[in-house]
Amino acid sequence: MPLCVAQWPTAALAHGNRSGDLRLLHPYATPTPGHASTGAVYLVAIDNQGETAERLLAASTPVAERVELHRLQQDGDVMRMQAVPAIAIPPRARLAMRQGSPDGHHLMLAGLRRPLVLGERFPLTLQFERSGAVKVEVWVQQAPAAAGHPQH
Image (cartoon, rainbow, N blue to C red; front, side):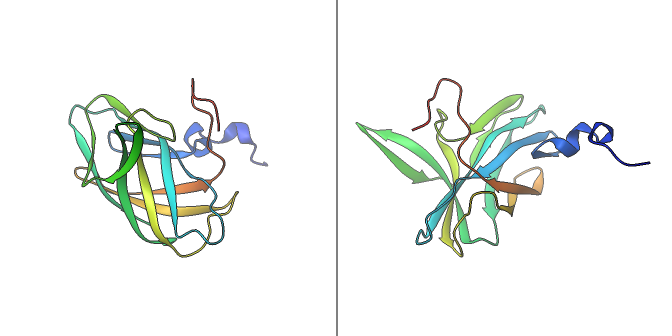
């Protein structure tokens, strides 16, 4: 009997991952020019469905020398990128980590080993305080449109 899409479990079609109380929704990176030494990874959201706070402590990927946790901060009329030691995810909360999100959290890929090419995918390991290491697959794509935020 041939397998059809209707027989696949819903989770197999979703782009993301689940680890305990965490749901990691749609990890993506945007394409980079061939000479770029940095890139960025975003997640549409991290849902903490548990009763306990969680923290993202670190990340790693084979496509970059290192991954830094970053946040955009308003400094007068200028938005500045700032490295942070951890990203808190409160209990029963959703943290948006997408371009244009109010918190401005994202993962900076430093020392890219190759360009990020539209349509490719690469592995990323996220290290959480309570949930431990969680592996996700990052899709290289154009940024999804955010509700209320037009694409530039």
